[in-house]
Image 1 (cartoon, rainbow, N blue to C red):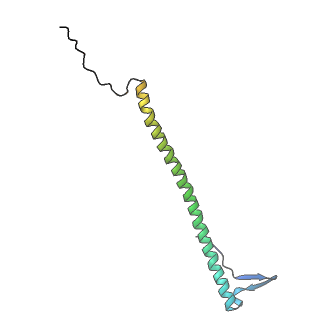
Image 2: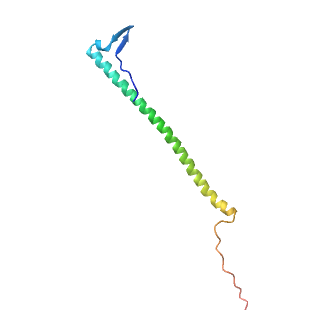
Image 3: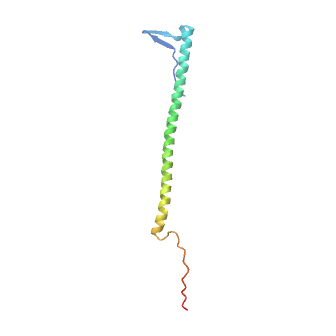
Length: 102
């Protein structure tokens, strides 16, 4: 979790005020601001993790698609390569033709 410093001092109109010396209402507002500031830092950290994970996933998807396409291409080329070397589908032998010589 990222470190976020809480506001303990306010600088207003070139004057510095310790939050603890101000009214309860101001203290409550500053406390809420600090909570939101922490939450924002957590969300940003989570967003950074999601972005990194998406980039990794994107690379994995691309790799898998390329592998799939290469396998399909290899499967298409295999029969063609077999035909070139005479290893195409076997041809069924035909029965010899017997001529009637009588």
